[in-house]
Length: 294
Figure 1 (cartoon, rainbow, N blue to C red):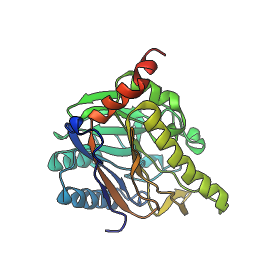
Figure 2: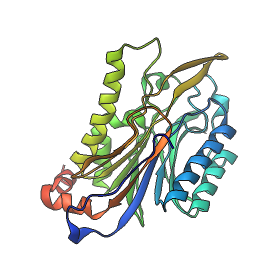
Figure 3: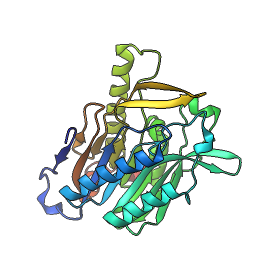
């Protein structure tokens, strides 16, 4: 399949080759307002992943069920909606942890960009509301105000969403809570009005640089899942389209960028990670200890 990469961990310290987990990021094109079509694609891609090898954790892109809905808030979902329940069922059927991308969730009179971590039993273990909203989102969404981490059998997992990536303080807060793995659903596009080549290049460079920096400066595994193809959304009944940046990737302590889709095509990346690498990085650099004292 186009865009598929599988990367095994190089043997660096053979004495710590244990507690291995397999993680994946899915990069997919999202159909605007078409939850049925998007769910079918999620099932197809996650199914392909699991048919190739056992997977412990899969991360989906931001706005994965509907695409952005700035002028279609009637498409906002809840944790109990049928679409979210289907994602819970997929996690249960495939026996994996699923970061169910994100979706716009209504709570009272407010709307939040919300990411969920679903466990292999189909239960929601963590919910996170995007703290740092992208400029257009600020018109209709309310930001969250918490950094969230949950302890699981595959490690302590934290969540961030897209533009959060640019704010290291959020990641520091998760590290203080012991996060070993931080998953980042994203919907990072090139922007409308025919952006200049330099702007597109800057977006790619920013994603690559920030993912790598967050992994190395925090001694944690970063799993970044972006959209593919075209970013489409409706404005007063008219559809707008721009290119997604893509560049979904996985970055690890010591090793840097270990898996990546260097385009905006659909696909997925898979990586076998030894959780002891985080501990070895801490022995060498003691960054996490310094962060805990900040």
